[in-house]
Image (cartoon, rainbow, N blue to C red; front, side):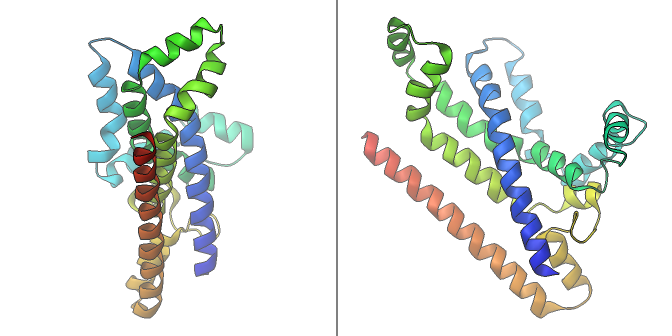
Length: 222
């Protein structure tokens, strides 16, 4: 059962990271260039998951997933099942909960990107996609790796949001953090130790690799 929870957690973390990069890239690019008095408000909304208790965020997502809402009703009519207590539901919750970890590194990179590189690219009549692919992406590669890595690592440790909107369904919503809680609650401390140690080592290795990669990128550009 623990291996099932581990596989589900890795699947959730991988999908969350991929989707977050797709969402966060245009959002961070727009924020880095949007000069408006409301920009701090948008930043605050994106950063809310950093300060809100996960149970609060999970509660409002659970309400939003209700079949009586537009989102929940549309999902029920399209799939025949509810968003709450489903893998799709915890995936959406993970996207909301980990969004600032993907947006912030990309925003910082885009904000400090030397605009002269893009101006030079325009002189070669590059399209916007070519400018991004051949100029922006190579210069901000480390930010993308950081955003994906932090999103992945943050998803691994999710508990409150997943529990609120996904419950504890083996093979569907029972991730490692919930399996660990179950072991502790049933006094199975040996199993809890194994899961906790596995999560600790994996997270430590992942973050160490991220820091090493970023350090090598800094030394490369210097």
